[in-house]
Length: 101
Image 1 (cartoon, rainbow, N blue to C red):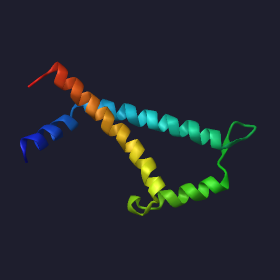
Image 2 (cartoon, rainbow, N blue to C red):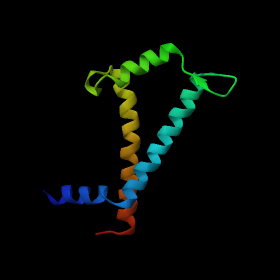
Image 3 (cartoon, rainbow, N blue to C red):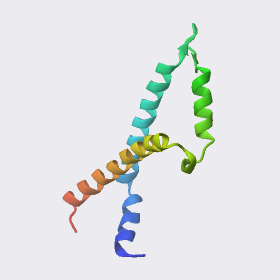
Image 4 (tube, rainbow, N blue to C red):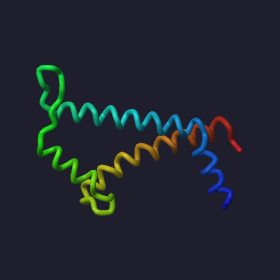
């Protein structure tokens, strides 16, 4: 393995990288929950009913491999993936500023 690849693997195994990705994951999940709740019909008991059209669409998407998604669906996944990459880049840049080689 080349030195830069080894450094990347070492970095990805750090607590800082883990925490950065965990924070992005929480933000992604919270955003999704806000969206999902806004799409649902609230019952008198506070339960949420997902409209059938959304169940159909999401069922299709979750059973479809990424490579077979539409371009717009792939773009949505790429947008989320960029958030993870940006978080890792910020951590790495911060580490480089505080601990130069």
